[in-house]
Amino acid sequence: MSLQGQVALITGGAKNLGAATARELANAGASLALHYNSPSSKNDAAQLESELKQKHPSVKVAFYQADLTTAGAVEKLFQDALKDFGKIDIVVNNVGKVLKKPITEISEKEYDEMFAINSKAAFFILKEAAKHVSDGGKIISVVTALLGAFTGFYTSYAGSKATVEHFTRGVCKELQFRRISVNNVAPGPMDTPFFYPQESPEAVEFHKSNGLGGRLTEVTDIAPIIRFLCTDGGWITGQTLFANGGYTTR
Ligand SMILES: NC(=O)c1ccc[n+]([C@@H]2O[C@H](COP(=O)([O-])OP(=O)(O)OC[C@H]3O[C@@H](n4cnc5c(N)ncnc54)[C@H](OP(=O)(O)O)[C@@H]3O)[C@@H](O)[C@H]2O)c1
Image (cartoon, rainbow, N blue to C red; front, top):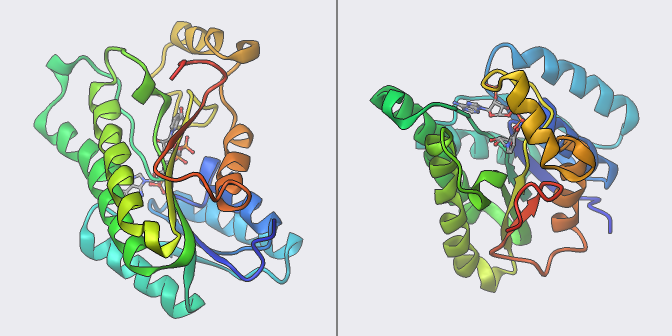
């Protein structure tokens, strides 16, 4: 199925899973409103922009910088994209922050940061998506395989992503009559720079040993699933698709 004529807004869309998703949706013909946050992601944005423009000259691509931890910043991102593209058919919320620590060492500041990005930004992105996505559109949030696992040390990460499953269930019911599907995709430990800083070499080996074929999840395992939800998988709604090579059985 083609996404020709459709507009996709991807948060955290300049690198890693966000960029892989942008490539998948561009291959299917979608125009792309891509967000990034940190100044260091600006280079990734510039490189992705030139790659996409070369490969898909007819696909419109624009980038937007924003820290999305306030409702106002999320609202502005949607307004800016609507001004440039005229509509939004697909929203992929890919922003996230990880912390691996025993709960006894987690400060209030760290808790607030985790929930500001993983829960609050996700909530207001869903709110703006619910207001602005065209009838028949698609809304996808990226969560984590840890929602299907009992494990220590990721309590603030898994807990702050867990809210999104329930936001998604509620919003899917609210948008059912506009034929908008709302889902989550939950990758396993994924081979990107997001994963490594908090993991020891032994932990990396442990995570690998739990995946099909003894490897980590790759962004190229996940981006086609996001594209599927935007195309042939449109009947799926209110769900969390776990894609982790058997890392969790849920
Ligand atoms: N890698 C893994 O092991 C793994 C496993 C399961 C799920 N996930 C989830 O997959 C998604 C993509 O992760 P990734 O591995 O591809 O790493 P990533 O590129 O670092 O993705 C995280 C994104 O969140 C953005 N972000 C962080 N703070 C933000 C803020 N305050 N405002 C707006 N955006 C902010 C980052 O933007 P900047 O870098 O520009 O700040 C970045 O684009 C995340 O939601 C993550 O939780 C990752």
